[in-house]
Length: 112
Image (cartoon, rainbow, N blue to C red):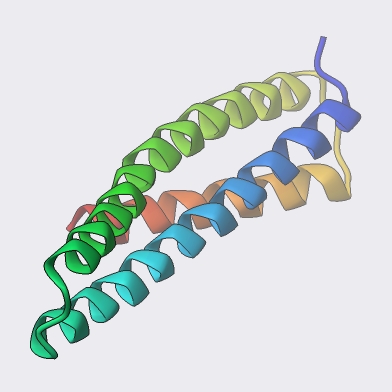
């Protein structure tokens, strides 16, 4: 049985994972710039290797985060559909629909 409270929790989860995804994307950009700068300056090979490992770990987190977001989105859509069948309405439903639309738009732009 879906409740508005569950819907609110699942909406919050999706929003948090989106923030996490953006954070990892920014981190990858930052670490890539740092690695390139180190290569230009001819940094110590050990330091460069460590920096490349940091960059690699950051890059690995993005697909993981996307999978979690896809799972959370599917869960949110299921709960939303269940509540709509029960003819429930309210601010929570509007917020959930908005979040679903935003995440789907995010997936569309990153798949191109």
